[in-house]
Length: 163
Image (cartoon, rainbow, N blue to C red; front, side, top):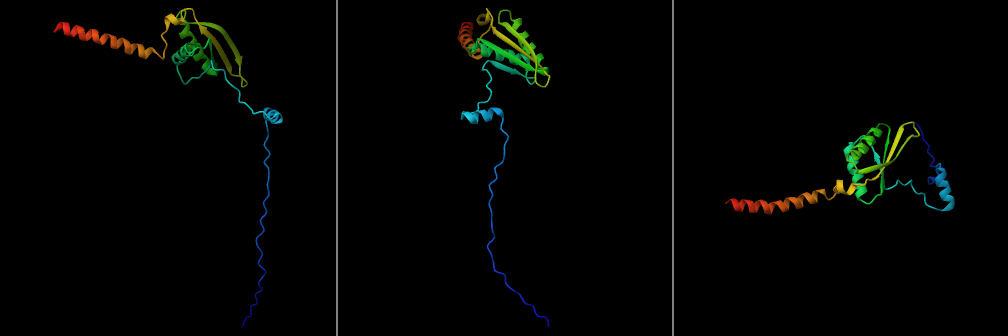
């Protein structure tokens, strides 16, 4: 026969160690300066009168958007485009310029982006005939409804006279 002998080892509770490791995050110089002065970091703000043009929409869309900005109280509107979108900027500006007196182009600026892409910025202001030529796009529908309501009684009166 075989004889086995077992010795029970003293049970010990498992030892758990918790290490706190701080992850080192590289801070930008702006964040480091803000942390040193205890001021919050603000994201770069875009001016409220700047329209960033893309290839996703037509020049007509951006021309109407520019009109809406000018009706909204902006004295000037900046249309900016990068790369192939520069043609859309030119198209929107030409649409506005064709309506003589609608807008005045006050500044055209070309430059290169950090990646070497062409950048175009066109600044337009209200032209001398801006208010005469264009109805506020936001109120355009309302005026058409008023005209339709004004014509309805005339048509009803004309129908009554014929009968």
